[in-house]
Length: 446
Image 1 (cartoon, rainbow, N blue to C red):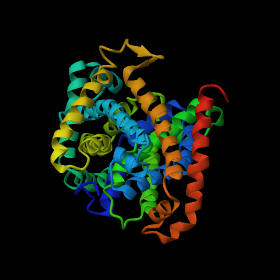
Image 2 (cartoon, one colour):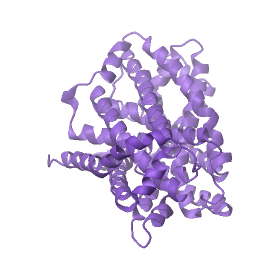
Image 3 (cartoon, one colour):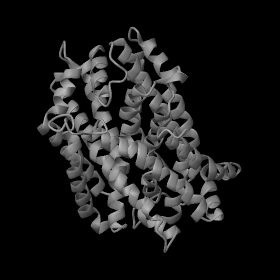
């Protein structure tokens, strides 16, 4: 194992891994990407990609990490020594660093909203939530300050290690978030005009399916399951050799799909009920949620509790992004963890400042029509994640022995043996072809 680091239990691993997926991937990003990409058409593609591409890739990363007991870069070196396949792990570390740099900006927004809910700014009568949100993200001191505070919270937890930091935080707060999400969905579905939002989300309009929609859905399936970045290689390296990888991966994928559905059912009915645009963008969650809660009895209390829980879901999602860099640099040396965590956190903070200022003083700086925040998002979600996923899908069947793959696949679940051939077939042929075809479609060749 990676030094003395190890999950204390299977449930601790599942909740931590699910937290990496369920946080911003399912709750913040899924609704707004679905809203800007055709609603039901996007959701259908996302569901297909998650089950037939994301889940097999999640298992592939689990196999790489658990079989070697090493973090991302060292795991590839151990499997293919003397080669340059470790570039997959290095790309994963780079991708996570870029991702966390703009992820932490959103985390800062959550912190700001949480603090403001305490003093009641968000639930005052007649609040213009869109104007309030734009005012917050355009303020350079608020945007950068909250981003740095969010990263500081990450650093404190990661510096404590796997069990005392990541696992302890994930074990109690993820179930609580799930409960409050159900409450929010129930309230959202009872709003006047809510069914129009349900129809937009669940009824696919196939005319909306384009190469760009497919690419976004593919990227979101990777983003939501946290695959393609080798994060799950690092997380699974801390997992006991006795635990079932197939069962764990299945549970995490199901959790992710359920929460994505809940996110859609919480957001889109409210969007249509309040006459807002489903293509609101990254601020969708921050504009709609306060409006929904303001219509509920004890709305200020519910808003505060949800924002607190959402904050921790955001943190569990960002923990994995910081952990991969820390683990890769410290190489399992517990004595180096604290210092390494601060170094990586500082690098992420510096990289994230331009994204934090993208909606304020740097809003005039664009590339291909996108601001710095959106460019970083697009680079990771639609280029680096698919590229990393494609590389992993090629690497596992090519460089890992079949008997090693089989042994890892069936540990704890002997009945999974009948699915092994299908999984390997998907990795070897279906996944690479699907990813390449979507890319070719995107650039206009198909």
